[in-house]
Length: 463
Image (cartoon, rainbow, N blue to C red; front, side, top):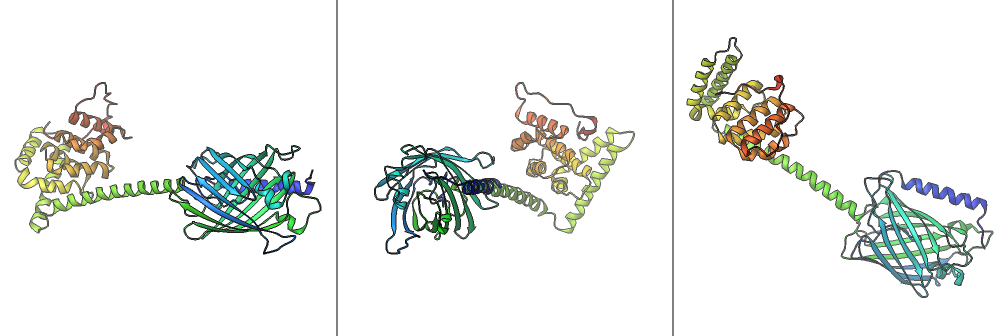
């Protein structure tokens, strides 16, 4: 039996620690993708409907002969993001299979992608490569987990293999670990360490994927420590390997880097949602501007601007009448009746503009909203609904909801439902009352907390 000396054992442990730490640096990505790992099992799955065809050429470095390579062929199939199969020929038929057990959680760093599988069934690829004969392990079962760091552009794989038919128990537990480092533009470097027949095997590969990730060229050294010579016997020998892989099929593909297809779809969904929110905001803004332009279209001439100033002056007088002590309801009622009599032919177009002018005194705008509600001016309802989502003044919102309730404006329903849960108690109360006034009271619905004195709406005109 081959033995691992103390120095090599410590080297292996340090390598494993570094690889695991590198793979845990930040949040994971890469769920379903075409892995660049070459020798050890990996936790990635080919997307459903895709398959790879690959051929490898190997030359022994101790007796290098370019004209006499060892080569093998493999086909790997992706049935879904949960199941995969590979078959090949390396001086005999060989096959393997893999199934995902846990799907990587992108929001939890401690949930990896976990897969179990079998490889080297019937014929061992490594036995053929290294001329290990019947003693080399075959019919291996394995479990492997993987995590990624987008920040470091690393993906780590770690697990163990167990050869059921191995002799002497030396291959019953063979741990392995590997990392993929992505440098951009389709270039990767992989480092893969594994225990084989009681010895330590380290391999390094450079991988290049051009043409939208459809082709892969890889070159590397197997048993890198052995290139300088080993004093002890081993089950493998230093080799130089070059390979070509082609990704075929019509399924989804990772397209670039360490990002998997599910991650790319999730990102596209987030982008679509963000764009939809922006479109909705722009639609509201466009409607708001269109309504204002419509209301302002007839007020551009100087004479109408003077009329608007007169309306503002009238509203200011009305505000002062509400504030004077003692309060004279008869004078206020007479002024309101005058406004009502001239509303359609004089006041209405100016009031619809005044309520959108944020530079005016807020009480003037609230009085304008209240008058519009009392007049049941449905032509102004679009602007009133826009006010609920555009301005944050609680008293203006309350007055606007009262006006919409008086109009029985059903289009305000979605906004009122949203404002029922507003943090401001007065806004929430007014939203519930307005909604009940428009659509009727809901059976068993609570009326909500009473409003405090300091958030009672303006006195209602006409009451």
